[in-house]
Image (tube, rainbow, N blue to C red; front, side, top):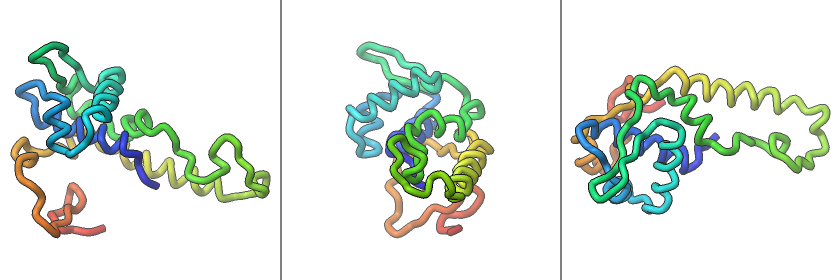
Length: 157
């Protein structure tokens, strides 16, 4: 299972917006921060505004900010709303040509696994993965691995 870049960027935008509660942030600064194209970020931000996660202010001194508190932004719901395709295998998609679809037991197992994945995400909110504003200023240390939110940097699962 791999999240799309759209979901990845959605999470990153919300994390940055959550760390920048004292001001509006812009697509340009977010683009520079993450090294992501402005046009792609524009689509992500517009989608997050339509979903009610962000509020946007147009104009010269405009930008965007969280429209909800970090505790109100459930990661499982967000991923379900930003992932366009959970078709893990051919039989989950339209146009399925697999000859064993009628008797195959694999889809039930994969559906259970997918639901478990999203259910675990649903246990967390943006507040659980928040960073401090200064975390966005320092480049990552080369070779440093970040572990689970409850672990220390370098922890591995």
